[in-house]
Length: 68
Image 1 (cartoon, rainbow, N blue to C red):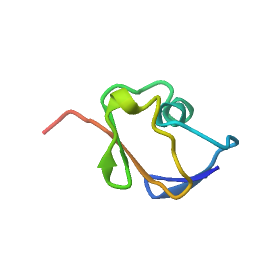
Image 2 (image 1 turned 45 degrees about the vertical axis):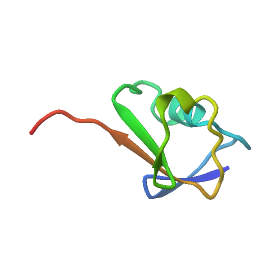
Image 3 (image 1 turned 90 degrees about the vertical axis):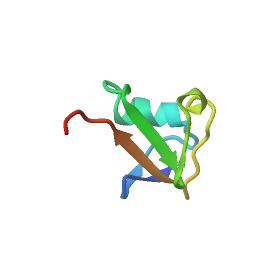
């Protein structure tokens, strides 16, 4: 499966991925303080295990940072 993540095209060996499965592959060590948007719509964390990604999805993963 080919996905566009943060404006980069990436290949995955699976035919189907949920948001949570993608995050487990991309950032397994740091999943607190992040937000995920699919096609400019924020996906609530409660839906990460059930939201299935499509190859045409534009995925944005945002990590919160501290500072001012």
